[in-house]
Length: 226
Length: 321
Image (cartoon, rainbow over all chains, first blue to last red; front, top):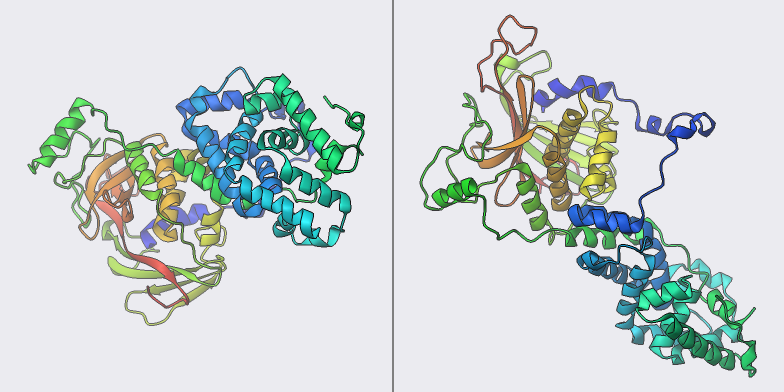
């Protein structure tokens, strides 16, 4: 396109190589005033996305990786990306109903993810049972084959997996949101849209069953964590 | 270690998720943001144009066109009222392109395959310079390797390929590897293009327009990225649309940006939203004695025009789809 080159060639030649983009002042030279302001809270991003829908992608970039790993741990990698995509698609559709007084949207997203995981619970239970039966974890191995070498057979792990498979859905959701999702009781309650008291009771029951499966007959071994 | 710690430890070996695990999910989210075509009542002026167009009556395209220029060369400035609904602005066109692209798969070549682009070029002799070809109109075929490491060019009448490692300017990236690295979310894409075009010594919006036009014309981006690029163009200051016919007399919508006495234009098929080509048009206004090299040239003169003839993916440079 010779005609185009007439307009552009000079400017294109004057470009610096792309690797030069990374150059810049050393961190010590950056004045404090240049330090970027804190990113907007999730709630502000969601509110902004009501006018500019594409802003919702910021929420994806913040939380998708954490949710993805959580789904991988529960279902394995085969469904994880689908579940995350569905989570954010549903969240986007109902973003106008978000409780904007809650700055952190992660519990809300975990709640949506949990609902979607519920539709795959047979697959989830099959994974725990396979681990309990064989001592090999198809989930971890499928996501990262190097994991196989790091895992050694463990009777405790197998019993734990068997116990998870036997838990009711509600109890398993609470237990794993707290243990794997690192949510607090309040956040878990918000995620599942139940009272905090319900979270406590479900967790308590789940932990008693786990402790029993592990051979701990004394219920007082179960220490409640805030 | 209590029971809760044991649960925490289970499957803790699962590695951290990475961006590569989530490309598809992000793409699906962005696609879900595409609004359905609006069915609300159109503003009155546009409705009138649509109604008249539907009746098949030829009208002067003036309502949705900011400025139509009579053109004296290949690629006419004004098309008769088409059967399709008029496009009020570039944003509307971009939204429709985005909606149409949702269900189209992104097809990129493998690293060892090539993107093939064939175009017709016209350059007015009135604006020729030492870099111009001797003939005003000719066909060119371009192959760009998937990994961007090589390009090949064949001019009309030639049987040999001119190969260049890394392209004519390795820093001016248009190759599939580069296209794949571009975000599909328009705000992020604009930010990235501003960065990539920042060394072009013209105002920022103009630099993005030039860079985007080149990507569209020579990079043959897949439908979703193409639509995102249209969206970026639509958000630049000073961008408008007009109905035009391209070098091959195909009817299209021109997304243009005027800078001084020159209009740069990207021409889009209003039905498929594929790229038809592009033009640069002399707007006039520069006296013959002015410093502008285009001074004294007739208003509306097409300085150059490009029509995309074919694109595809092939296994070897020299192959055609």
